[in-house]
Length: 201
Image (tube, rainbow, N blue to C red; front, side, top):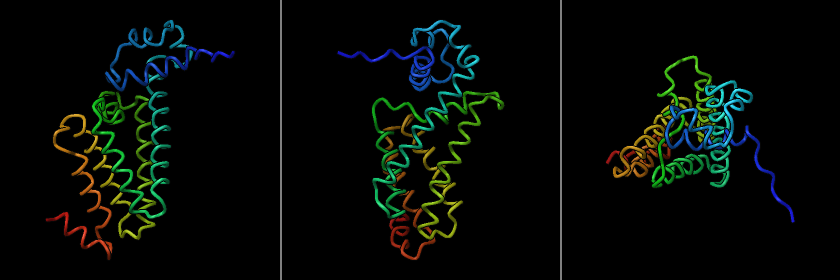
């Protein structure tokens, strides 16, 4: 009979902070984090140098997980760039429709961390650059005339979808986001006129 090793203090702090900062925001108190992790205050400073370091590491961990999900979602959609992009929007729409959805942790963190020098901001900026690059690559492969600008639009669309999912779930943001994404993707493409016209109606 084998038993799995209990996670160490560092991992327990990360797991507790990843859950609590999503449910309650990055303003959650240190005492609550320590209690949830079952560790002493000393562990927080030994492993992360304090709460700011812990928050930054949680964001880094979460962005790595979400980037993997973006890539997996695109890969599962096949080779067509349009289908790959829309698969991402559809997946985010499903996530935003879940009853336990609390919004985008990165947007919430950026708004709550008022110190522009907080290390968490660079993590969220790097994540958005990565997602922008994923979008731009697919748009370029699709032959979009302005892949960088269209990727900017899709990022704004994603932020809006996730914000509306958290604050106005009855507005059916997933449906609206899908139609807007089709418009952005198809805009300027020779074969996109029918889709753009349909959205305009």
